[in-house]
Image 1 (cartoon, rainbow, N blue to C red):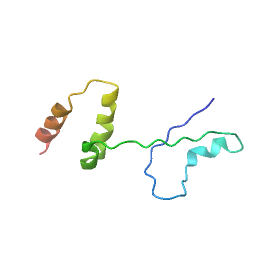
Image 2 (image 1 turned 90 degrees about the vertical axis):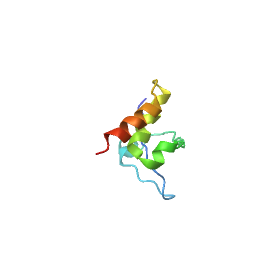
Image 3 (image 1 turned 45 degrees about the horizontal axis):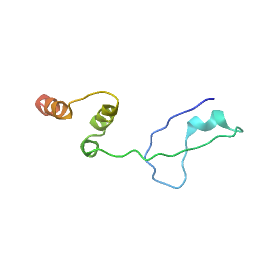
Image 4 (image 1 turned 180 degrees about the vertical axis):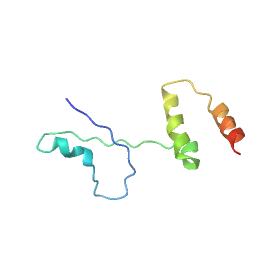
Length: 73
C-alpha cells in the first residue's frame, strides 16, 4: 500500500494535488484531518511547525520563545 501526506490550507472547493497522478485509475480512500493551530502558529508559521513536534518530543515552549526573542537583532 502506498500513501502520501499533503499539508495545505483549503481555500476552495476544488483541490489540486499533483502528487495524486500516480494514483490515477486506482481505488483510494481520502481522509481530510483539520490541523489545529497553536497560539504560536498565528505569529510565525515556522515556529508553529516546530512546536507541533512537541506532541512527540519534550520541548520547553517558553524557553524556545525566549531564545527566539533574544536572538532578534
